[in-house]
Image (cartoon, rainbow, N blue to C red; front, side, top):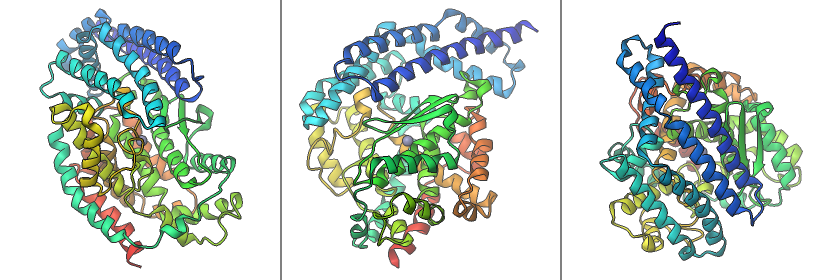
Length: 499
Ligand code: ZN
């Protein structure tokens, strides 16, 4: 083996080790959100901080820098795949070496204490309890961006989740989408679906859990290397070989749980489809959060809210909940799962108004970072923007600015990914319908193998060979646009609401 190949191999071995360390940290974080006793938060904060410190050390090992220098100095010997690995490793190495261990440690502690403070503040509907933690997160986010010599703090954070994306790229897409969404919301008003929705009450949790597990198993989520548990806020963590999903159940809101399980399973199946042999390198990583979200959204919305999906699952759903579903037809179920109405909570929002929730958060994050809005004024700022964008004012801060977990963990610049994911999912759905002409019939027969196979081949197996915009172009042959999402929503909703 040449010295060059040996150097490349040393680099990928170090990246793999770092990945394994990261998977331990992710497991500890999962445990915190699923199992942690209420008074064990301080211990967990220490454990998390120690793991973050070790991980940070593994990321900034000086030899990684030397190997990268060697590989970059003879980059003509690198294949496109190896180039992607080196490019990605360089980005992470530079970030890690410019950030002092003390900052990384302070961030990890703030994430853990911030999360617990948020949970308490939300339970008591007391924003002032959370405000100091949010201020600390924003200060840390600014400190990091300035150490990285970022031109714009918020762009730096957007780029952390979707490499290459900026506010200037996102804003026109969102602006073009807004009037289209508003016209759909207007169309859906007074459609009389609320009465049917009120019938979804009294669904025992055990039945909900077993039905949801059956659905995602059939879709292709592999329970031999994954599981599902309960947490305050649904999420997916872990990696290809051990993928953890969580959800929450409400006896009087079974559809929210079902669709959150399908959503998280979409994330999980993406993780399970990444190339195992390349774990730790760009080739074994997801592209970014927008692409991740495109996978969860596609399963949740394009598939899970289709009439074909319910044609298959209706009878099984009735087996589990015979009395509850008495008096509800297939059409009723289909209309309820596609009900569009403005509501205060993002995670329970329908697929149209969901995007308006994201625009609200995108606008507030921009204001928080450009100095237009102070943290102490966030509740008022939130309520005013909510009125402008969503057309409603939340009844409390728990239902408003305290509803999301993200800011409690210092996650800024992450929200836009959700709507970008919706745009990507719709753009690729058009490709799928072309590639698999009888896709709808397959879904109606409970057959998901060619759908998952297409996603595996065109998206999952590619890892991070391409960046967000590049992969969208590579798969669809076009730039990311708002138009496919508008076409998809209108195709589904206009007939439903005009009938
Ligand atoms: Zn998601």
